[in-house]
Image (cartoon, rainbow, N blue to C red; front, side, top):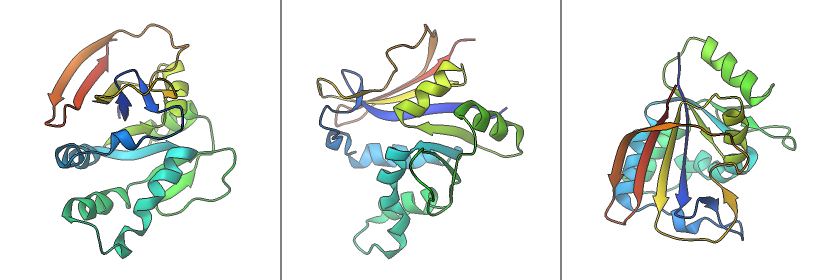
Length: 187
């Protein structure tokens, strides 16, 4: 069965965006960006909330971008053909290799798990991940912890989540003092 992963950059105090909605502190150094490139290779489909989808639209025109370096071109070449499912109550259409979700997060995950296909089902976005977590559908939590305290904003982990025991699978520290933590849900 395809595993479901939730992976995002997070501040040391647990937020994916600060109180002003900014996340410029997550701008990756080249080693972190290379890590994300390698991670996306294992993804078969990406589930996104509207805000993350709109942020990632930047990459849809990457083939026209002449200022990209080799790593950015490689990311775009992997990201753009990747199937995406967008959850939104306000969007009526999406671009690229994306479709609007036709059901709940749980329904979409179950549908994707039932379909033939390779690769992980990746979730991007705290609100979306909270819905999946509430249904016990997340298999792994992957955090790229940035050495900054932002003091509020949107939390990586929902504040109302039930207890979930985790097993540490992997850690990695980058030269920029960013720490990657990969935890599997203990079942």
